[in-house]
Image (tube, rainbow, N blue to C red; front, top):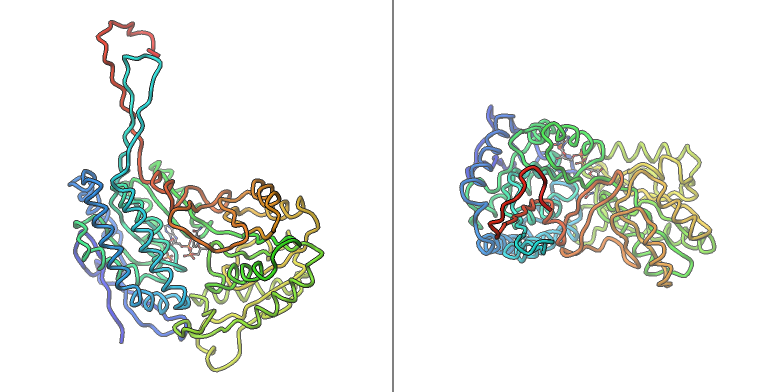
Length: 492
Ligand code: NDP
């Protein structure tokens, strides 16, 4: 049965103006299973106006405790509904249920973490050169935030943005990917039940024209975007017209670097988590595996064995380790990458196509695929595949590993596997990335900042620094003296 969803604007549920809809497709069987509203530019305008009204009409002046209480209630509702939400997300984007369950709890954890900051947004008291001048700062919400998310983890990515936005006192218009919008609309129901005032949280769904209308809207005060690098650049260009600040969480080609002194059992688990979890559809995918030469053959053989043992299947099945990729276009794209890599000198050691069998005929499945002896400057080592395809590259020295790791346009994260603490510090310092994991990979925390450098984006999500994206600093300087001053010379 197909469920029909509506837009959530100004605290009310409504069809898109003109009544257009589009289907949600289950990537396991290509069945349409939900009907979603295709918002118009008019709907986007209504959502931005509702967010503005809510911001000016009181939300920006709510005290932190009120915001924190609402956010804690939202977290509670999400925890209570985690199983239902996880099932919805798994049906929508094909991510395995064992992961979406964890992601719902992690999203709730993020709302709780930022709820803790909502009543602690203090500024600084700043001593100046003149004792008669009193100076201090306040931190004020920036206004209406446009939050644009991608299809691979809609709820987790939204929490990275919405939680600090609400804690800061911003109002929001959310635009999820048309490839996976169901959970965002289901989540808006939870926001409504939590008691957020009308217009604080608005959701518009539809294709990229909705995102374009939103990011180009003059009523938007800041944009937080997660998605591809090309889209991030397009949004930055549009935002420049209104000088709208933008936070960008973009793609990656992250290196997992295994030194010969690593605990190999631990490292191999990190390698598998890095590239085959979520069928490689994560920005943090450890899609390049750099291995020191003296353990290279052993690691290649063991990675191959681990990849072949992965249970690929229906993501709703508890025992499935890897589901399909999320969309038809992504399926084609991943297979094309594999086919090109085969002709570009890399050695295919396992996978390389679609798994065979009845289970797989209707879904967007790709085999866990591993290439060894990949040239660091080849397409497979440079471009983000966003699928379960690992490129293994040998290296001899620490310096070589650093040069290869830094040798792409991206700079999101990196993994280091070594028992040598000095080496871990030395290498981590030289990696051009926003985050380094040592002896772990794909481990997240609400408290730890996350984000990239170079083509992987700018700004940080999660952790205390995320709040800065949604707050402006205002400086207040008060002159306590009644001194006459020279009006034609600046006072210092
Ligand atoms: P896209 O860049 O295609 O889309 C991301 C979002 O932007 C979607 O909601 C999309 O809408 C919307 N959008 C598309 N065009 C525009 C536009 N011109 N103006 C405004 N909004 C627009 O990325 P994907 O959804 O395909 O996600 C995959 C990419 O996201 C990968 O490259 C991945 O690396 C990156 N990613 C980065 C993460 C990070 O934290 N660094 C996390 C997860 C993913 P629609 O889908 O309807 O077209």
